[in-house]
Image 1 (cartoon, rainbow over the protein chains, first blue to last red):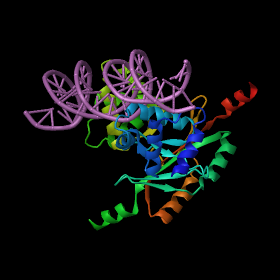
Image 2: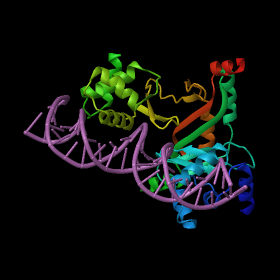
Image 3: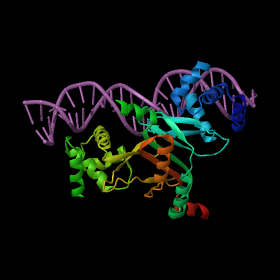
Image 4: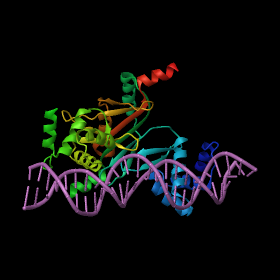
Length: 148
Length: 148
DNA sequence: TTGATTGCAAACGTTTTGCAGTGTT
DNA sequence: AACACTGCAAAACGTTTGCAATCAA
């Protein structure tokens, strides 16, 4: 955990590692794969630093996104959600959003690469990034529904 | 055009086809593949009915979305954008969003079906819908950039 | 020391809501 | 005539910004 924080400090290049930024990053590290919103991070951060302001959370998230330390997601619930980039591999992943319980499941599979290749060739469109979300019902919710 | 409107009127099932709703639908029909925002639709609708209110636009769009007459998209510009479902075929399509000129290009290709099949099998996730967006640079912008 | 960063409160842009009045069926 | 629907204005929501004070380097 400390190692991760140290790595992120290095990625800040030039920007200061303030206590507030540390608290935000720690909250993100302690909640991997959670896709936290700014408000949720604010509540978590407040546990560690009661005086932290919501604006600081937003400004920190903007900075971290700019430095590609995290990704901003939009799952259609009216707020941005954030996820630390797992730098071990720059592997894109997709999200399954359960329409029943709102759970988000990650899919690592990169079959999409085929599609990207086709698009680049046929449309002359140079792809930089993609957002892929599948909406449906997860196994658990699907089973529950069939029981009722 | 009149045929399309008639079809949509039938899809309204039980809900009234008011002049305001007609104006919104007409504006959508007259601007196919435009991905209009609520505000943009408001301006278009006002040309046909100067007294129409923005709240009515939003309420109409909510209704049309609920009835699956249109799709709501989120391209990350802070507002929802709407597109009539082309009911001739329930064919999903993807969007290419140009990071330079913001143009949106549609891709009909459904290679994604392979991926969906895999996900359903491996994750037990029953897919209802998907959102796929590719961000990159369109041919025109890419060529311009290379010239400079 | 000094410019980057902070908290606060006010402002922002989009969307939603309460309500009294209107109009479609 | 009934009740779905409307316009308006105010409120709600997530997010951004101006500013004076503070702090990390």
